[in-house]
Length: 583
Image (cartoon, rainbow, N blue to C red):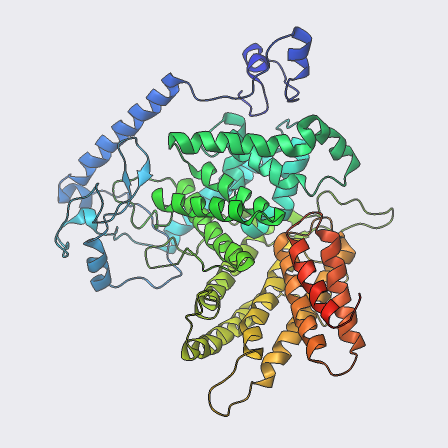
């Protein structure tokens, strides 16, 4: 069996490889050249290309089959229901004149093009008689969706069982577990069942590039672990993973052979560079990821607008998840860098549905944390699917706030801002009211044990977005005789207090060694409100000063994992210095 962690000589001899780099022990003993890179053979590539051509031929024959044959066929292609409004027939007809759905390019890769491209001739706007250009009008019954869900969930559980039998050497196993525990539930960058399966089989949802990106992204949280730190020394303290990820990524981009793992790699590298404070690299990596999902048609509902492309249940699930992962990350990096978001949701976007909810019921424990004797973390249900879905909904609200209030070009009118304040304030309130109890943290009645970290971040980001909605109102000069609404300040202060209360629970339960950047940003946003209070106060406010001191202490300690926070701390300290305050 192939393995991503076996070198070529060990694989040829069919012996167990330790996975040591740059050379495994067996190769050192035999004085052989140790190579890990495993590109697909030419014969394998040609076989796949021939299969694609054959499938395209069969699909084309079916498309031109007599109507009587289609009507008498009992098999119906499935389609998932959309959470977004379904376009009416008039809208669909108008869309169809300019959009032909997903297609294969001349190299067998999935893509799509509009009416102005080199790859499509102009057609009349009305295409009612052309079935090729219309979205598939196929039923979306609950039975059909249920059967698709059952297949995906069964496969996911099967892969999780098989995963326990895989022999992944350290420190790779530890670093991957860091990703699955602390990163995946919130951001959902990588679909675990497909990745772990294809890591053993070297399938298309795995790549050495992606593996190195995942390892590199996890390294910064592991350097305080003495055992893992010692193992990482063989890999230049983990820097080797970063170099390999970038080198292999450049090769993929140069060849133009970009896949789902390429997009996932770009997202992880963008997140890593953002935490390091390398804003240009972070922005470029994310931009390439967003361009790629458009080039690969991932931003299109791969089931409804499949056209001549046949996608499996797993393909559709992965593409839909990846779109929403990109959508969420687009809002976060726009938040961090003060830019306008790139991705927008439309009637042709993938629906807000994840059929494989197997991760929802998994037990979550804080990987990598060792508690003192007599203290343990009671495993709790992960609720990771619900968390991610709610996070995507929250991102849609925040998208409107970014566009209509935080346009960096300063083009938002007073009416536009007021409308956004009313509509998104109500949307945030409804979102919070609809949030299930198992995802909501009451900062006035905190539990004794902190919920999983992704649930903590979800709650903190909700309060962060509330602050970002109301904070600009504290500085506005309103037309006429109107005065600022005092409730805006109350909302900001209560949200800031909620953030530090929830984070304190996180800190007491997990420490600060696994504090992701989004959680750090929430603390920074809370600090901005406490700083404004101190600047506006005519007397010494000891309580607010202590709250600000808590925030700066947290940021000072976690900047080792998120160096970009050094800039935020400097700004806060400079503002306090002008007030003659020394924390």
